[in-house]
Image 1 (tube, rainbow, N blue to C red):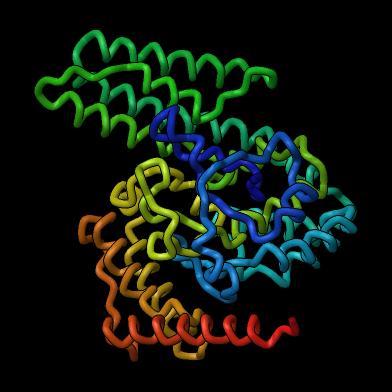
Image 2 (cartoon, one colour):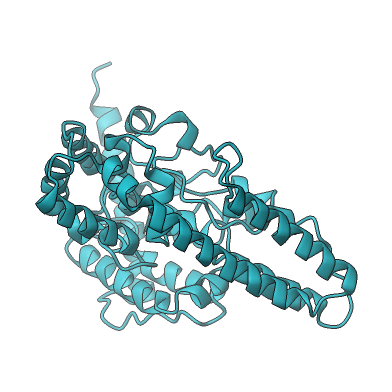
Length: 376
């Protein structure tokens, strides 16, 4: 299967597990039609048990707190964006969907909206090209700040490993300064190359090395930096740039315990999360992700509150134990950092289990009746 959203330069913790991005779309046909081949990402994780979640609408991302868009809805929006050939027209369409935009994308939308007032006939790439020179300088400074921090942390490693880290960061700086579009710097260049270095199993070196890699994750991407967005998309088409504003907000199936770390294909291991957040977390341990985004526990509580409300309204039938399963899984994966409050849920754990049994009993009886009613 192919992933919908454009390449967000995923957080990667090792070369083996970076293949596991755990993102599902809602419509396979829409996937192949709407994303360029170079930006599609293959993945193998089975998420069939999450199908009931895909029917839910209006949920906010449990990581970023922004309302998500279904695959079917984004397909309709993108058909309208395909007919927009300047910044004015694109802004007019996008203006109706600002509540779905994530932080960086909303900032870019506001810049385009201002440009629509002064130069309405310019294309979105032309706007980006106007901002490009300033953006690329600022982007390099953002990148160098992180690389400098990585180098400082590496000084606490053994001399051999410190030198190895400096060699990696030096190569990154060379790529950044070269301005060679055929050999551009991407965050994964550093993240994957650091996996070649083996910290000594003595003293605090393993912990120091983990701290070093944690800092490297903060290298800017088009999903976290306006400057990176401008530099990356200045040479893209009008339609690519317009669609990129909303694609991180597509609702996707997220493994709480990553598939690469033995996470099961079970609804109790799944949440609906935005493509941007899903891609950003990738196979990152949930505890580390919370360190990057301290508001995640609060956002997860808001997510489960919405789920409870939907169940009370008769949705997600046959999955009444889902809030309890998610409560347990999030507590496990976050080591207690996420402790969901289910006090507003009308079902006790026992009542929820009974409601599920009753539902599936009725389903089996209905199926049996239909089979017996068929003429011989």
